[in-house]
Length: 84
Image 1 (tube, rainbow, N blue to C red):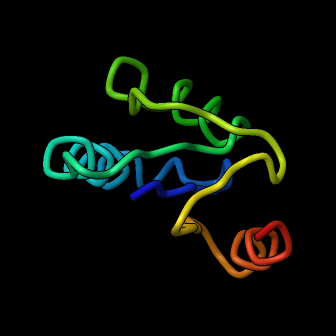
Image 2: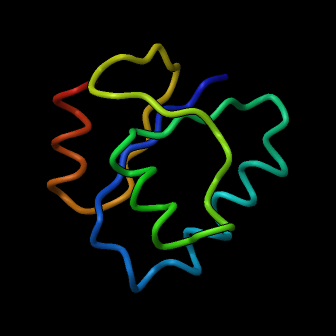
């Protein structure tokens, strides 16, 4: 299963949670393929450094995932919904 992940850049207070979340998906999700929206991946690389997820990226609506995941608030959810 492929999961497209969207997020925002206002998550500095939650970097520990993000690190654990992505680590768990990568470690336990052997049948999962994660792809992360490019701008969100840039943020994750900046904030998590070496602990950033190691997976593919996509831009805009250039993805074909079975599931979309929005990490953020109402605005992030609405943006995700409009793209999906």
